[in-house]
Length: 274
Image (tube, one colour):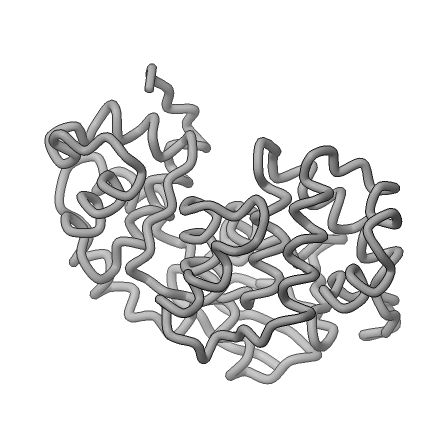
């Protein structure tokens, strides 16, 4: 299938640390969560197979009113630079379980290592299927992780994250939780999982469930806020108070502001003392 896009970069979006279900070979990106997907970009066209157009647009945030979003969050000189630099990105919707596993693995880690670990887990836990002659292994499911037991997880050298991954898999296995739940219900459920705090929760809400008002804050965001947004933060000290200050400032599309700030700050190595 072919879908036309405007001011969108597939490579930049999939390389931006929002989701961990894709890998690239040659010109093609591959993913296998529920169904295998092969996709590439040729100028203003996405060429893909495995998923229908509706699913691809939802996954890649292509239904978002991007011009309206940029106009609403463009509130200062810094975010204006970030929008100009990172404006071809979209906020994805990877799904609640893929986001949970990915961002639990992200704790004190980096994108390269997260992807390496997920690939190893997919090779072990994933089911096999083919797309256009390419054999893929599916994203590791919580069912497979839980049913294989805690000890099997140790082979992936996840360190202290091993107990967090198993806790997440066990919770999803034993409790019903899905994207149809209200945000507060999702927060109340996920906070019960060992290793999930406010930052990981916000990442799941934004990048897993496409809640565009969520504003996760990692080290890159906090560095930038300390340099450019002290006037907005005011006396806020706690994570929750800082998040509230930033969501009040950027409004209903604060998640897009977060993504632009994160990408611009990370790619340009903006640093300061926190």
